[in-house]
Image (cartoon, rainbow, N blue to C red):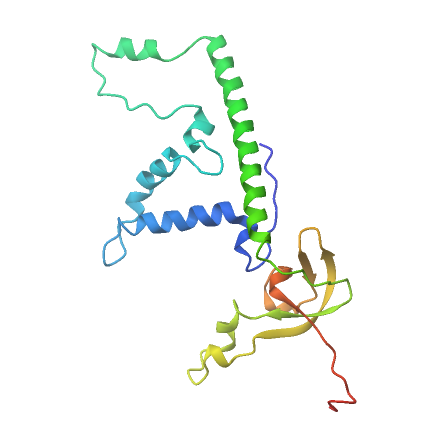
Length: 217
């Protein structure tokens, strides 16, 4: 099937933006189908999925139905003995039509792929305009890890603590792998953290060692 497994970096939604955006859309749509007790959404999944696959995706210019079947689903009327024969005649059954459909679908998928790449380039260009220069990290350097997404774990069920007073940075940790081309770095984390140790650079902060002459101990 050509499926490739790619691990995403922790706490960086942009790594898998397509699925994250789709999940967000599904959650928003399901809010119109659930009741006050938050039940009934399971029965609405098929309808939501049909509507999503019937909608044109801005990044590709096609619907998911078109890229999967090269046509929108047929809304068949109730079949009666009078119209069964006409319905059968509308479906292509010869090999030539099947081959033409496959070739056209292949071209449409390639066009959608090119359109998506162009959208990604435009989005990256817009995002990079507001980004500052990336910090220079190398293997063996020490770095701090942001706790913004993990601060609730510091509470440990203690009601006398609040997240706003918890440490904003953890570490320092040693960088064991650096991938500056993708702005991701792998840290040597303790085994008990249970987190995939590769992080986007926005989650890291340079470690500045203490000057013992100015600040003893």
